Image (cartoon, rainbow, N blue to C red; front, side):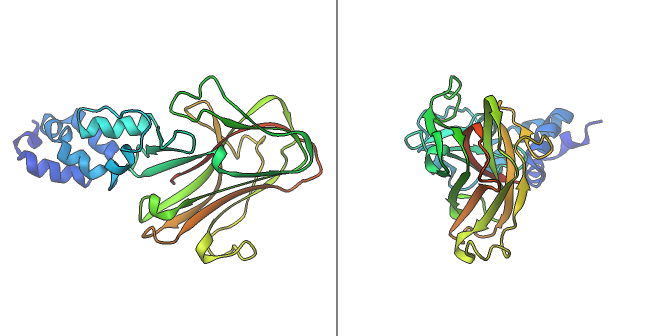
Length: 262
């Protein structure tokens, strides 16, 4: 017997609003009593982040949806490009509905040592799939340092976040030895004193244990994590720095830095 079918829809909606988005989607398939409530805008509106309308208004292409549930999963599965489409993309974390931002390589500070090709900007065939029109292609250099930042008030409050380098290899890639990755709250510490709100992570891009294959065909490596409290801590900066500056290295393709809930 489906006991939930006898509960008022408002009561079921209140129960579902206390569950996670994933659990709500599952429960709608378990019980007919849950199904109607689990499709309602009132439930899914609670899973969507505040001021989402302002973010959607900045999308370079229309965001089409017929319900708040459809909007939720559209933003989970299909990142949208914001503003001029060359700086920032936005999506939702499917587990929590929290905000995720990918900062384009064009917005990062990319420093390199001597080299023939240095850093070049190229378009990729799949760049139209909710991604940026240009990526950074780093060829034959001897040292690399990449930095990027985002304002904490753009992120979801009271949330543990991590920053990720989103990248690919191309051709006969080599070099790219051990690197230092760091995430720090700029307003609370200096580069010389990063022990309070960030810690160095040692990563090796060629080491499969430190990188992860993404569903969009790219790879990522976690640079570090931080807790975003009320979103009033100013900027948070992520940094990726090579520790072996005198070895030739090539070819790394950088899409950007992603900040998303951990």
